[in-house]
Structures are given as structure tokens and as C-alpha cells.
Amino acid sequence: MAAKPGIPKGTRDFSPVEMAKRNYIFNTIRDVYHLYGYEQIETPSMENLSTLMGKYGEEGDKLLFKIQNSGDYFAGITDEELLSRNAAGLASKFCEKGLRYDLTVPFARYVVIHRDKISFPFKRYQIQPVWRADRPQKGRYREFYQCDADVVGSDSLLNEVELVQIMDTVFTRFGIRVSIKINNRKILSGIAEIIGEPKKIVDITVAIDKLDKIGLENVNKELASKGISEESIALLQPILLLEGANLEKLEKLKTVLAGSEMGLNGIEECEYILKMLSGMGIRNEIELNLTLARGLNYYTGAIFEVKAPDVAIGSITGGGRYDNLTGVFGLSGVSGVGISFGADRIFDVLNQLELYPGEAVSGTQLMFVNFGEQETAYCLPLLARIREAGIRAELYPDAAKMKKQMSYANTKNIPYVALVGENEIKEDKIVLKNMVTGEQILTDVVTIISTIQNK
Image 1 (spheres, rainbow, N blue to C red):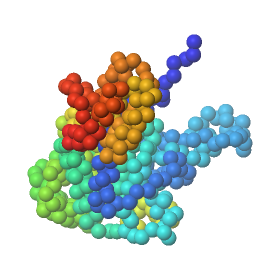
Image 2 (cartoon, rainbow, N blue to C red):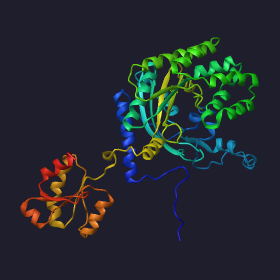
Image 3 (cartoon, rainbow, N blue to C red):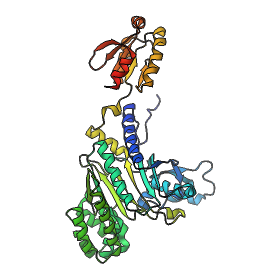
Image 4 (tube, rainbow, N blue to C red):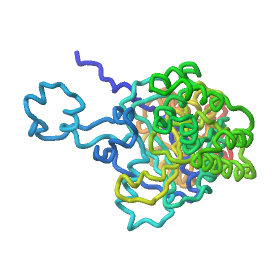
């Protein structure tokens, strides 16, 4: 007996209904991006490892899916190296390419390669899958889609303001209540400087980013394990527990970070963004969250993260400013800021909250029953006319028993069925059956089009 087929852990198949839901997500996000003047690009699924490595920190590098070289990949490798069982060392010789980890680094590479053809500021969006060799769990997959929007070539904080508007607009359209969290890497650097640990900024941010997940006590233990002194950890506590409205927090921080020019600069940037947004009619909560750090090393200014408080799931959108990202590819002085919607997590949130509109997941609206060749010849021109009116319609391909054809319509949740037999042809009429109510009427194609369009 042949082995039962399967798919890799952390990946999923999607049914027609699920794909309709996913396309609703992609189309909603795409429409909002277009509203704000973003243009679409695509990049390859795989990149050179030299492009990917070193851009996501040590932990991120471990999560890259590496692609084995074709041909004789043992060439140039000694027996001693093979017997050493050094997986990382051998992978660097076996593999020259990898699946992209996100869309931001490939975008930075794209900007560098095509800089002579790009008009700056360049506003692009990208909706493509990414891959991470992570441990699969609820809401975390090895293959998933990201829906990115980035602006490069502009230092203006109006870009950050606009990106918050985009996030608010998208989730308002979805009907998902969210909290849009904002922080600034410069504030975090200022905090590290004030507590006397400026060289430990990465360790500090990685630890405090886990505050919601592991609690304050465990965050303090992790900080201590990284060699941060008890005195510095003590100085950090009132900052981590800072409360109040957003602008109140910033006012308190101005006193705490008075001795850090970088920290004060970060406060100024956050203050500008929040004040500009205050008059924009934002419909979702905006929270200044000083523990928000995000693990990616390339953020240098504003940081964003979106969570849906009504669902137990991680962040569903994130992003920030990365002033120096293109510099690693030889193009310095190009500032960038962007966000990424996690389509797969949004898919799960919309499912759990049952927020998909009916029209978003509906398929065929009308099916013609197949009674035979004569009836089919009569129905095909009608079918073409109905489709021209924008109605999704199909003809059952075989002259099967009525029960089978109606069962097919029920399985696909087709709301209307058209029946055209010998008598209907003579009268130039169509029997339209409402599959929900069971009601049948004898009518014509014009009425059918009007009925379905106005439903």
C-alpha cells in the first residue's frame, strides 16, 4: 500500500472557501495600499544567502531555510570537514541560496539594484510568502504570507503617521478591534545609556520585548543572565512600569532621559507622530509601549506592532524605521520605514471572530442544470450574457441525474439554480430556483440578472 501523503509541518493546504477568505484579506489590504499611493513589486522566493545572513540577528539567521546547491556539492569539501559534523559550517559550503525570511531585506536589495530606475521617495507594497524554520505552533507557521508597505528615500515622520493610518484603515475595514502599539529604538537606546549599559542594548531590548509573554520577574532574570548588573536592572524597573496616557508617559520620560540626547530625540519623534495622529480620526487604540522592542536588529527609529485583544494570538502587524538597511548593500543615506501585515494570523483572527462578510466568501451565484445537448446549446448564450453582467455562473458539465446536479449546487452553496427544459425553450423562459427558500419562478434572463445583482 502506498504511503499516505502529507505536507511539511508548519504549512497548510487551503480549500476554495479558505482561498476566498484569503483573497478577501489580500484585496482589502491591496485596496488600502492603493489609496495611499503605494505601487506593487515582487521579488524571487529565494535570495543569495549573502543577502539574507546577518540581517535578522543571530536568532534570525538560525531560522533561515537554506537551499542545497545543485550538482556535486561535495566538491571542495575535505573528509575531515565532513566528519566534523559541523552543521553550520557544512551548510555554508553546501548552500549558496535561501528562502526569504521576510520581504523587507529583499526590498532593500531591490532598491540597491534598481536605484537608477527608481524615483524617490519610493512607496512600494508587496504581497508574497516568506519562510522561517521556526517551531510550528498556534498562529506561527513555517510558510506564511506577508503584506508589506515601505517608503524609502524620505526622512519625514509623516510617513510613520501615514502607516499608522493605513493600519487603522485596514483593521477598521476588517471589523477587527486592535491596539496599535508604538515605540522608538532611540528611546530604548537612551534607556540603555541612562542605566549604564549602552553596549547591552540588544540584550536589553530582546529581554523586555518578552514582558507580556514571560512577566517582569523572568525578564529581570534574563537581563541578569546577560551580565546586566542588579543596579542597572533596578534603574530599569520604573521605566518598564511607566503608566498614564501616551503624552503623559513621554513627559515623564523627558525627565528620566534628560541626560541622553538620543533618548530625547526618540521622545520628540514619538511626540510628533502621536500629535499628528490626534487629529486624524483614528478609530483604534494607539498605545505608547516602552517594552515594545521587536527582535529585528535593523530598526533604528519608530517601531510598530498591532495586536487584537479579542483573540489570543501574537502580533498581527509590525514594522518600523530602518535608516541604515540599504547601507549593508552599498547604498548609504537611504532612509526607510515600513509595516507588514501577517495575512495568516489575520486569517485566523477573522475566522475566530466570524467577521468575513458573506459576499467575500461566496463563489458561484447561479448554476444552470444540464438536461442534454439541445438544452445546453440554448443555455450557453444565456450563460455568456449573465457573465457579462458580472454574475458568477456555471453550467453543470454533464447531463447527470437531477439529484446529483442539485447536490453539487448545495455542496458549493450556490444560491440560485436555473432550469431550462424543452417547455422553457419553447416559451423563451427560464425557471429560477432559490436554493435557500426553495421558491421557483418562471422568468427571463433580464429578470434573473436583476434579481441576483440586487440580492
